[in-house]
Image: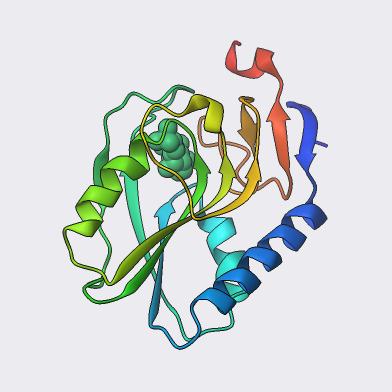
Length: 179
Ligand code: PRP
């Protein structure tokens, strides 16, 4: 375990199993449909790679990047599109892939922007959900794990751009972020 990690919340194996289940569920739900899977960088890059490989449908993949947190641990409430999707989503069944749903601010804003582009449907798939922290009325259609309000890193999630490559999800030691 990394020295800055207090506790492992989900092991590599637990993540693999849950992501495979989510992929199976999505595969069942979207039989016969045209599906575009789009992830919000950067935190979701590992989840996206694993999830899409667990979906047995002819999907397309796309990416967007937004920024809301800056270098801190608390969302500023400001959302800015840094990189937009490359393809049109008009008429597509869009699945937005996120690593974590926290205040809901990012997705609340994004859903508005994306709905205006007239997709056939939009659903949200998040690996982690922290419902306690929600300030915007938004919920995920597919959730990997519901977690308490702890500072988690690994499997794509960072603190100050570090720890994304840890193969598990761990709780960061409070002294690392001055908590
Ligand atoms: C994280 C995460 C979500 C957002 C969730 O991104 O990937 O996009 O915060 O928080 P919210 O529900 O409070 O809006 P972050 O801004 O940390 O960027 P990153 O994905 O590049 O790590």
